[in-house]
Length: 500
Image (cartoon, rainbow, N blue to C red; front, side, top):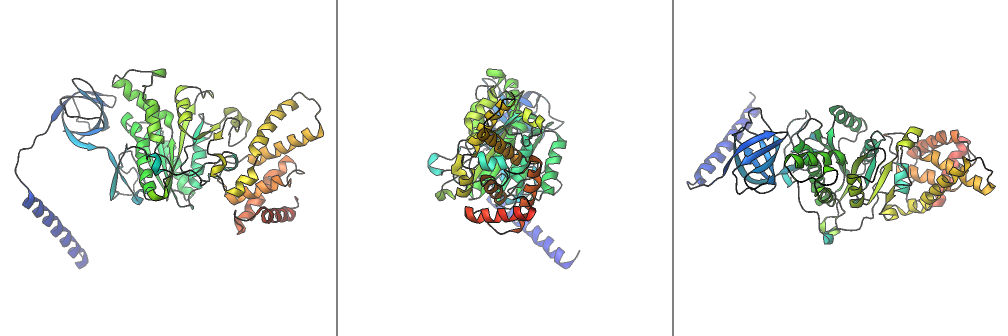
């Protein structure tokens, strides 16, 4: 052993002895009362416990074999607890002890770039995590007086969202659609787009297959977005208790950064699985089922979670937490129980349509069913001015296009409107996992509003947009510049390409 290493080891040993000696000096004999219960039965991630008359909801209990559980149901003669960690030695008759603590998770910058479970245990191979601060998983949302208006844009890198369905910092925007329509890809795009914007991201994967988890990690790493992101994972084979706790753990991690004054983005992928896990736990604990066999408090559960996303006032540090909850529909049915609940809780929804996906319109966002209740308040003034009536004009185009299917002759003005609508639809197409800068959005908006694409064929739109994107990457023109500067520059680029 080198001298420096030997001295370091000696100092560590002395420190440990000093702490032990200090503990022995302060130790006092006295009568201690403790409660002990016993496991009556276990199964399906649930433990029924007799005894523990002082147990309270959401108390953490330790079992003699080393397992951990969370009190989740109080009956007259027993306690129902959801297992958080289970050993192979856990059987009926195992002693159970109250800890008097509620469930918490380690938070802070040490989590950036890491993959953890809902208890804060690392799932990657990067070693243990040293936490300086812990935060309760389930706390009350900030009061109204601690909140501020949502007025700052959070750019997702998606053309349709950033121009027509804007998301602001502190907003709760639902992503809804059938399985396989690109909901997760849209959320991953938003996370990737925050990599250089000083926004900390939390991606919560609930009940996903391991291959999906690995693929998500690799996409974020490949796009240099993992360094400002923490992934909270409860895999498909995890106990139902962990899947139930996963979104609350991710929310607590993001909430800690928000309290420090940072902007955060948290993705819940997805709350359909979370609702099913909660229904499973509730039925196992013999709670009365309600609509679609969900317990009656499922609405309160999700509202309690999403209400914690907000923008804090300047007196509270000015931080924000933006939530993108994902929900799955079946056959496009948005009137079922869980989707309607979440639509009423959130500040708008982004609806992805299976038919649009099948036609090749990607991302398959149905503008007719998508809405942002924050609207232009969360847009940059220049983007708001350029986008203007675009959504309304696009909706009118979709209605007018129906008449073209009957083969009737249209007036020239009507044909021109349909032509511009077809160009806009071609512009709005975007490949997966390719978030775009807001400066690029400004460029194509100006070009479209000035009619620079009107004379082009539809197959010429894509190469033209690619050239604009390349030129934007080289210029220093910012979004703060006026319309005239952008118009001159965009027209110059299109002239160089021979498309003006």
